Length: 431
Ligand code: DLL
Image 1: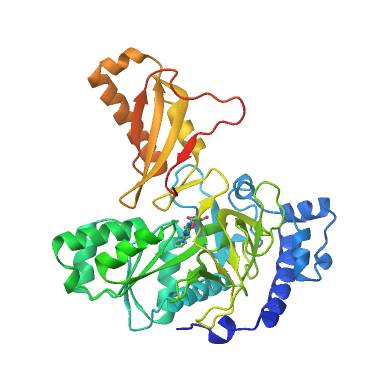
Image 2: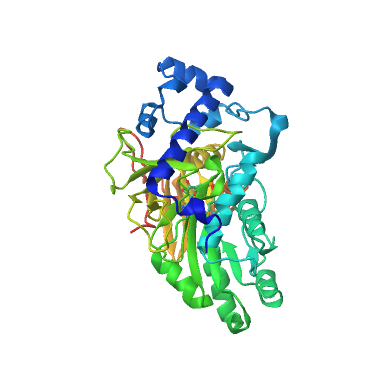
């Protein structure tokens, strides 16, 4: 199912023409309306008129997430706040979120991009779709919501959590589509199975995204619910969901190239890699008025496949994301930086500054274990005090990260020290 057939099936030459125009417009928007970019481009001796071909994108500097944070909250906006009709923020963290903004035009295009994703996954105006992403600054819920409404589907804005009620509504309201993170979809499917209600559900399709999902986990969700599950990808800085999504062939996620110009680079050197290589995905959004970005480093590792897709769409496909190039960890769809955990640990007495974050995937659910050293090893023999300390750490971490961590208190001097950069994260999830 197409949403905008003529645009989704453009030939590559037409697509390149649209991309070049979008790129030129975006560079001009940055240069004329964002003092930070104007200065950055001027320092490099780049003027918008230097962008004559698509390959000229490589002359442009990258933009990193830290630059959005450094210009918090509105410093990279290219329009005055009164022209912005929506603000969102990076998911899951307290402290200062990364703020993103949308003009009316940005919202329209964003919802078209999401409408393409859900249509490619088979959704139609006849579907009743329950959204089990948390509503709020996170782009996931409202992003899918507006895209699904645009195609005329019936949307149930259930939000995340409250599993019993989720399942009750799925049954009572004849829900045919579910929007959720893969881990929550799995959990819902397991509870539905245990309760013996799967046969009473009308569910046909899952629109899963916001975190990685292995093929095995997907297979389990599909088997439990008896559905087809599709993967969709995006990030708040680039709009939110709607950057790419799987069609029913489910062999890669189509990036909507008339709106997003993708590149793959070596994360260490910044060099562009040959077609088909795994590397960091860099994207220049081509339509954004409110928050234009040049060569945004997503930090996500994938590769691009330009081979024609049997579905008829001509837009390039990216592989499922297989890792992150920076230290941001995504756990259950929530972005976590080790530095946030460090800041929490450093405010609590009786524990030292040495810690280790261990990520595991058990029964397809992600877990974070925070190992931290006690200052005084004799505390290990005082169970009551030890438990109280563990509880304090867990609660403080939960209030900052918005998720549950397992806390393991270990003897002094048992966590490895490093000469150079410390490696604080051990990620077993992709093994
Ligand atoms: O997670 C946007 C989104 C919402 C996409 C709902 C799809 C569905 P952020 O909160 O800014 O935005 O987090 C972006 O999440 O850089 C990836 O590391 C990760 N991510 C998002 N989708 C996927 C996916 C939203 N399908 C960060 N597979 C990204 C793997 C994903 N990782």
